Image 1 (spheres, rainbow over the protein chains, first blue to last red):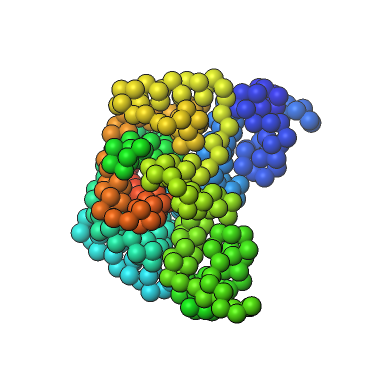
Image 2 (cartoon, each protein chain N blue to C red):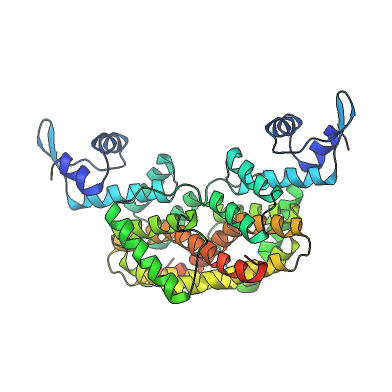
Length: 208
Length: 208
């Protein structure tokens, strides 16, 4: 298909498509004349993916670039998902050293009891979790922290469902793309469901 | 306590504290001389709350203002939490009208089957959820959508835990603050746990 069709199919404006081509986020089309190129269904899919990552996942274009290189690289699906999750986690908020140390110990104990391991101690999702737990501690949210183990049990059940969703697929590309989308959209969808559910429980318990 | 002590206790720089006072996010201290005021433990708590909302929750100062007015207003705890969740949800991403209609129907069916209700049809958490579901559809993520009901069941269990965490408290202020923190930090903490858990399952299923 031509550029105009690619734009219409993907819902991404022509100027934006050209920008992605210049930035290397979208691979070039097959050149048919000095100023025309032909694009394929793979280009449409890639554009939809970039749209989902930026608009739903809230990723910067720099982070999208890192994620797409990981997809196009020769890592295993498991490692690729690791890169994706690091980018999605974003930078960790600032907390006091004392609270951070306390939270790191709490999380290490939890992971030890549950037999959870990470591929690197500099794990960004973990740094974020430590910062959030440290903030809860600084704000005196003892009850939230006391129930952490119960949250971890439910998180494992959600993660099992996440991997089941991805795992029925056969091709490497499909697995990576679905895993990526499941992570980005999955967080959004689950947070939305949780907030709706909170409203149901809160109405009953705290009163309308 | 004086301004310098307030800053040290809360971990918020003096210039920022003064900015929050000017913007009305922090109530004024008790004036002891033309250019000195005395602050209380309530000021420290409020500053920690603003810090958590901006740094961990990622809220803009405008959103923090809306949330704090809701806390200081005379709404019921249930309604106040509603305002908080609207602000946390942020603006919904753009999707095609067709996909949005399809997703709204899907969600309406789910909520109907589970007996979930919302206080207003213009619910921002719901608009976000609809946009995320529509994006999943546009990206051809049929399997994620097929399992939506299972995600909803797990989301309800997390929400029940959330409300239990808040509900042991006695004072109105404590309930609102804890609920607010549980929502902001709760999303972060649960997403962190989910990503760590995904890594465990993914290593087993997709291979290291």
